[in-house]
Length: 483
Image (cartoon, rainbow, N blue to C red; front, side):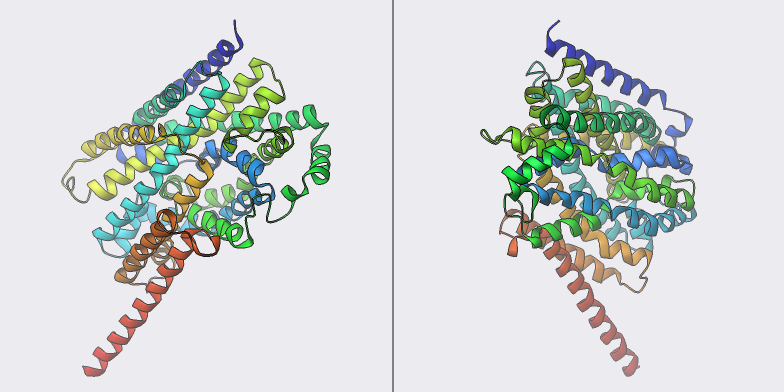
């Protein structure tokens, strides 16, 4: 049996195992809207830990993070910096969101926004931003799966087929089992990806350079620019800092994070998860080791695509057996599929409940809403798959773009949770202007000073809210004086 066949066989067995676990998780609760979306609101610490971990550690972890370490060097540590801030958001917001959801029946972020501001239109607006931001994030997972299959099987499974296989497996168990299927598959896949990441990171450093310390010592002598700021590609302090801020703030605004808050059995559970959450972040440390190993390995012949550095190092330089490569591919696919399942599920729920449910489906029964949600999982996953066929150039840049859009919901959400005096019109205007400015700087005009475009959008967002609030207060005072 050839190496490519061994790798393919191991991976296909793994995919079938994940599909079996996901389908077996289907229960009676999955047939109700609350069960399909929030797991009946009784998800405990262990499952929630792995679900929330899979929200972040995706194809980006196995491809994008090592790619940035290889391409930029030390600026890649922005990823670890913002991951250290995410638990704060879980601790502060999680219990409050869970309590509101349980008391008022919220299932989505848009539910909370629409109810607090007494505006279905604002809920629809938040839902649309959520879906638009989630789609590129889902595309990352499908594109990552395609890249993994193509490289690891030496082209035996091409990009389009590898992406399609991952798309089919994820869509099938999310369609059938909802959050229950996501929870149990994330548990299996989380354990898998953590074990594989640490094995590969330490084994690669040992095989090529005699250990992690020896690798960095050699880098310090031969290519010290990769170990200092602004790194090999000149990522300045502004770009580095704003990437951290937008990723941290935006990461706490993802609709799928709110849906997992609603699923928790208590606020205490969420606080426990926030304490243990950084343990999951250690997954990225060994993967970054591989990126740094690639700097030395490919010094004479730089890679055309930085996202492939892990695959190139493991398969071509470290010379692992096909059995190890097959397990590596399975672990990387675990990262892509676990996050992809969360994203497909959330995007479908948000589209159906926040957008369609308040417009064309406002009279639909719960059974009809669940059915449309299931079909939306397939439809949105298909859109992401087709987009992935264009093979986006950088998974990290695609993710940073998605963060820049979703972060514009932050003032609106903070108003609903902690600042009740914020007015509906002010947060609507702020989010609209912030999103517009972000899109202009992301796609049409270079962002000033090289800062993340999302920062400029968020700044205008906050300024617009402050001006509107001030103008509204002045108008109210004048009206009172006249009366």
